Image (cartoon, rainbow, N blue to C red; front, top):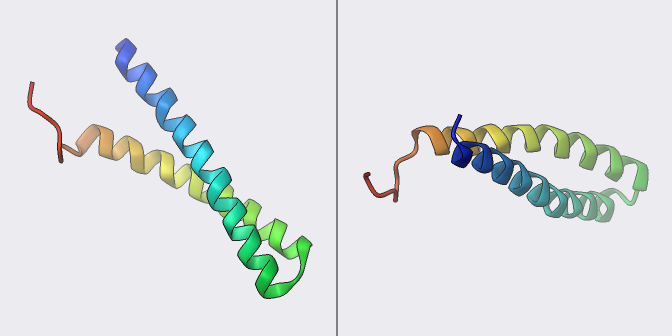
Amino acid sequence: MSMNQKLSRKRHMAKAVTWRIIASATTFTITYIVFGDVKAATGIALVESALKMVLYYYHERAWFRFGNLGRKKD
């Protein structure tokens, strides 16, 4: 594995984590506003966060590996 591939994996993971923080805070806020229950909002935000972080990471990896949209040919 090249150095660029290693850096790319780390970058994709960092993007996944920072995006999940933003998205989960949004989910928590909306759930709390709708249900008025901190426990329910926390539970939903945690489950949603874990699942979507994994899905986002693999989505990024698939685009990196197979997606040539907007890339210059070497």
